[in-house]
Image (cartoon, rainbow, N blue to C red; front, side, top):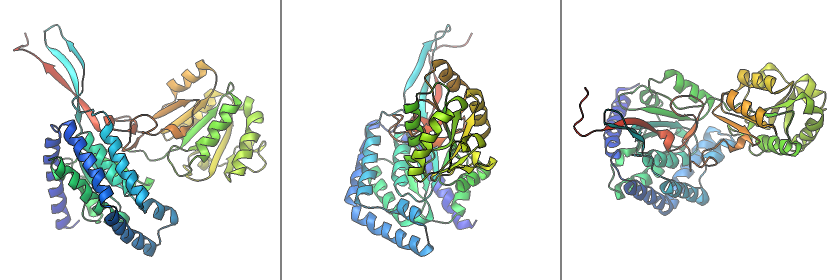
Length: 420
């Protein structure tokens, strides 16, 4: 790490810390004014954004980025409007900051309660998608946090253009423009500095591939909100409704392949396998899904390949699914406990007793009954938007929205009270 990068990152950190102190007392009206102004600035700057994005796209093609990465990188008028609409939606959400709960009198006469407060300074490290710059800026601002954003080098020009719109919004609302800082260097040394500056950064949120998240998690000296894999399961129980089961497992696997809440492993109770697996396999085959199955499942699926131990522990992010026949819910939960990444699991059953056992015993950030794993999403949960998914147990778990970007502190109200 060069001294110039370290000096730059110290400056960014100091500015973020100072801005975070101002944001604590920013009104909801100020924050919403900034968000709406950012949205308008994005729309007004569409031509500039597309021109800067074209530079990134040209550079990406020269570097040989694959079609999927180029698609995530690309902006058009529709995607710019989508970013603006995302900001407007966040402006419409309830402001969590300052909410007081559980206020009660104690025998001493004091009142004790909890107040929701920002985390402080949130550092976000992400890849490819320029829209994350706008989303992250908005979520951090609305939750009262200063943000230090480090996008991927492949989106450098796009991110800087979006950052200019963010600054316009902050200025219009009379807020510190350093409340959101998008790093102006693609140097990887800046990331190393960010994740080892607890004096400036309160939490890191990495958004990207498993390699990036593993590196951040292992090297960071700052708390990290993250998930590594999305090895999600659906279990078809003895008492499952066949129609529900087929629809759910088809949707969970084929609605979108390259997302963390797609089902990767299908578990089927032995008593139902002969009835439902051929129907499910036929639909998967029509959709071009490769099936990797245990011996019992393979006997019912002509086109299945043999599953290996590695398959049960793999997040495919592709039209591939592993299938296992299990004796019952107990074996299903044992399999999930061994191979799940703690993201999302679902059971299909008409038994209230079995569903309640599954909800209580399966230890993942989202556990579902008779629903597709694809619902594990901040928007679908009514959070409006999310900064990411957390499979950790502290401090946030599951989709992390505005409330997940805050904490609580105890407050005490007295009137000259002293402890006796």
